[in-house]
Amino acid sequence: MKNRLCVLVVSVLAVAAAACQRTPPERQAILDAADAMGGRQKVLDVRTLTVEGEGDAPNVGQNTMPDGELPNWKVTEFKRTIDLPNHRMRMQQVRVAQFLFANANTQRQDQGLDGDVAFNVGPDGAAMRASESAMKDRRMEMLQHPLVIVRAALEDPATKLSGLRASGNQQIVEVDTGKGEHITLAIDATTKLPSRVTSMSDSANLGDVAIDTAFADYETVGGIKLPKRITTKIDRFPQFDLRISKNTIDADAGTIAAPDNVKSAAVPPNAAPIVVTAEPVAKGIWWLAGSGNHRSVVFEFDDHLVLYEVPLNEARSKAVIDKARSLSPKPLTHVIVSHHHFDHSGGIRVAVAEGLTVITYKDNVPFFKDLLARKHSIVEDELAKKPQAFKVEPVDDAMTLKDKSMEVQLYHLKDNPREGTNLFAYVPKDRILVQADLYDSTWQFHHWGENVITNIEQIRKLKVDKQVPVHGAIEPYAVMVKKIRSAPKE
Ligand SMILES: [Zn+2]
Image 1: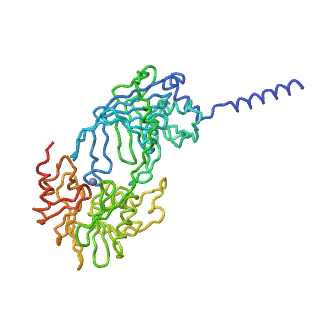
Image 2 (image 1 turned 90 degrees about the vertical axis):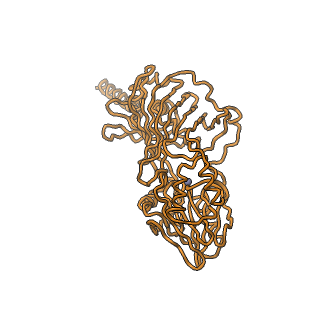
């Protein structure tokens, strides 16, 4: 009896000890993924990963129509090198615009990350420190690869795993890096290979967005399984489709560390300080310029003010609204939103929160309703804090705003190859054209300039002396026409 009791106690203790040591199911899922990728030790032994290929990078928020196809950057050369033990990454790419673009349509980008230091390398090879938000984006980008995320989950003691669950044929694990990054990792239940990672982020236009990166077409390189296709979406929009021609393990990464002068440099601010100036351009018309290259215009009517353009984001547009209100005791009641492109409609939520009625081309209305209804909980904006009804006056072909003090004619830009929903303004008393994206004095190319001249001179039969822009400088109309007609074609 005594012996039997002893055996029982020992076995209970053994079971208890085994239970304590049993691998948590989340960690087991990561261990299984590492084994499927080629083995835990192999995954931990990798020093560098180099990914080369080509792809497509659509330009979200810049399509001709709000629900139209996105203009695309074709990425003709792509190379990303990751130094895993040192948490460094370098990304070099060449991208070519597949759409009408007003500046050089081939761009080279060279971006680095070294721990918590982000930097950009110019064409002359000089490296410049990048902002904290660029650093955070790149840290997240580095984690959007199965080798990096599985390895972080395997070895980094700061990383916390939780929430294991099944979803269809996927096992889902929540991964918290302990450095403010939260990633939902999906692992294929059959192959045990990572199939996607998802993280939540804030977009000025879209609010809370899921950034979802899918991994496919695994191949074995140096004993490790690596994807040949990596596809990223932001919300419902495709962001990058990378087709990998070559995965390399443990190649010499070269010098991808941040140079000392970059490490010791001050971190530039995430955004330049906002300055809004007000320059009178005619009686009752002000040009709101200042920092950046997105301007607005204020029109003064008998008993109210009307703004043209709430650009970029809440911060810029709120400063513009405040400046407009400082110009006159008359209430600011309306804003004309020139078109739906994200850099031109980024202030629509704050405009509605501030009680302004929106005047815009009719085809923008459903898209703007969607933007106004979206959730902004990650970064709570003014409209999220105090919801307001959307007051809108849709414009079909044209509309005139007129009283004794001011007349502003609004016209839809017709048959333009780039701008499907654009409204420009004309003030007959001063023969002033107010416009966004029709023309910018700093552009290299004016691919759609002839269409703009046709709209003004033939279709609308307007006599313009001066153009007052959202982008670029105020110029005589004759200068604008001359620049459009003398610009290189390509
Ligand atoms: Zn623009």
